[in-house]
Length: 142
Ligand SMILES: [Zn+2]
Image (tube, rainbow, N blue to C red):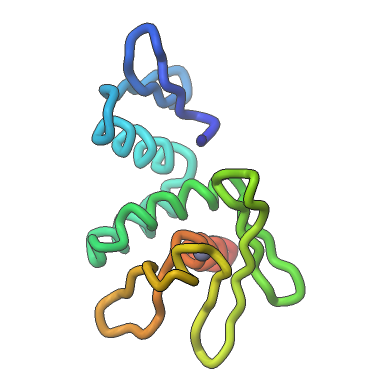
């Protein structure tokens, strides 16, 4: 969970801190999504732009793109000896390893290994949220 998002059980809504302001969003899937996207926008406008543009161009990847942005903001991506390590969002699974070979990234997560990761049109690369997080971390580091 991003540091600047909380779910307020009393008022049953999501709250995003933005300086002195608190932005609120209704409970439920749509409210949660809006709250998290707003939290990304507040934390890192450049990452938000990157994610929003990619999600608009590739709606089939939108949920993975926003999860990836969360991972990047939680500093879940590290680089070691040319290999990317991406923290699992459910901590018991440890880190996932991103490797690059033959022009394609691979990840050792269930989504990628089970071939349920999603493609962009005209691109042979399947994307899980970890590969997207790795991609965002690389772009944002430039
Ligand atoms: Zn993965």
